[in-house]
Image (cartoon, rainbow, N blue to C red; front, side, top):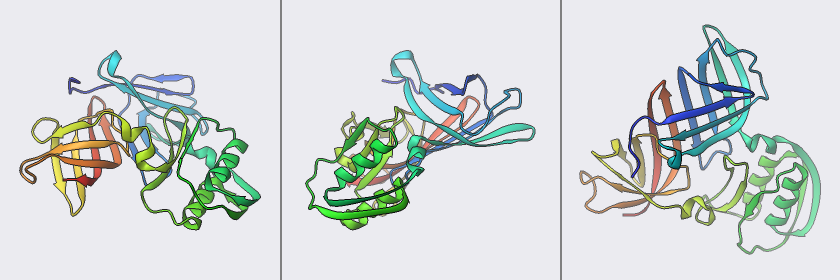
Length: 256
C-alpha cells in the first residue's frame, strides 16, 4: 500500500537539480505522440536553454519511486519566473527521411527508420501482416507511422510512444508491458477525489500515483456501478503547485 500523501519530486534540467518549483503540468496521452511538460521555476536557476535534458521522477519512498518523464527543453520564457516547455524523447522522430521499400511489413519499415536515428531499444507488434511496397519522401518518422496505420488499415487500438527510459513501443495497446502491470484499484472516497462518468469511460481526479496511459485500472464507485469497472487509461495529467499535487485520468471502459 502506498501512503497517499504528497510525493517527493526529483527534477533535473541539464546540470541543475531543481529543488523548488512554482507549478508543474505533465500530460501524456495514448493518442498523441508526445508527452508534454510545462514548468514554472524561480528565476534564480540560470542558463537553461532549448535542448537541455529534463528528467522528472516521483516517489513516496525509495521503494515506490518511478521515472515520470525524460525529454528535451523546447522553449524558455523569462519574466518574474522562468516558464519552461518540454517534450519527451519522441522528438527524435521529427527527423525527416526518404526511402523506398519493396514487399515489406510495417515492422521492417519501422525498424529501419528507428535504426537510422539511433533508437535500438524497441518493441514492435508480433502481429503478422501482408507485405506491401512503401515509399517515403521527405517525411518525419511520426508521419511515416501514421501512414503505416492508414496503409495497413489499423484501428484506434494501435499506438506508438517512447517510455521515460527511452525505449520505443509500436503495437496494439494490450501488447505493451504497461497493459500487463499490476492493476491498481481506485475507489471513490478512498483515493478518488472526483469522478465524472461518460458514455464509455470518463474522467477522474486522484492523488499522484505511478500510472501511465495504456495501463489497466479498476474503478469502484457505487454511486454509478454496483461492480468494479475495468478500464484502460487514455490520458494522464499531473498538476502540482509546490507540495500540492493531483492526477487527472481519462479512461475507457474495458469491462463493467
